Image 1 (cartoon, rainbow, N blue to C red):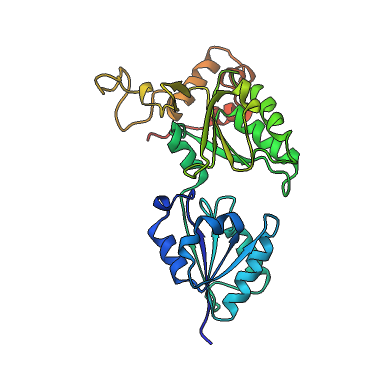
Image 2: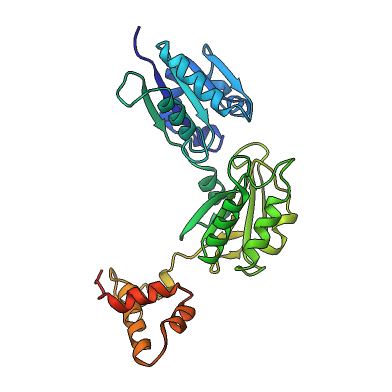
Length: 314
């Protein structure tokens, strides 16, 4: 019997035109296609002549086990997820099941991960350019993650001024998590912070709501929704949500020329080396490490490190 193969396929947000060529090829090659029933519907036109196994929302590990068992029989299996299968998808659980079953890379059954466009990137594309600077994604589902861990992540992201993408923000049974997330974020963000609430990006029932952080929890939000929350520099203009990359800190917007004191291709004047020099100057003026830490909103240990290190030029 020939060795089987498992394709872990992310097919993107759902519209056929956003599915990669490799995802289509993997599904076409498969003898067996396994997925959540909603995902199966989204690729129905690619499934003629294949064995199709539909599973429910809470049967993720069953999908992984089915994929392994069919691959052991020498079959080619496509285990599918919308978005990217490695981002809140089935890649991780599948590898966990395989490794626990004694499988190892190169041991017979080949596994190939086929990446896809994430819900995060799809939703961002629909509303402008909200992810142009540092961002993070946090799932509000406490089905597998304790709420205190989720709350700590929200607190850290809010305090660090990340653009935040919320996955699994609300369901029929989980209605208060989005309210708690809003409360935590409002401790560190302006009530006017731009928010985009995107449901079913690039699917038939797509909807987009542009709002502000103070009104976020009042929006229509469900399991098929991704919520994008801006940072302190994100703005809404003409229906677009934009997070600046920071070019205006260094360059004149009209001429493109570097501003006084800045050099193209070199660290910003407020970069690491200059910051360390600033810390040392403040110490020389008599400011305490604790005062400097409060000024920069950093732990004292970072100020102490700057006191003892020489700058390294970019």
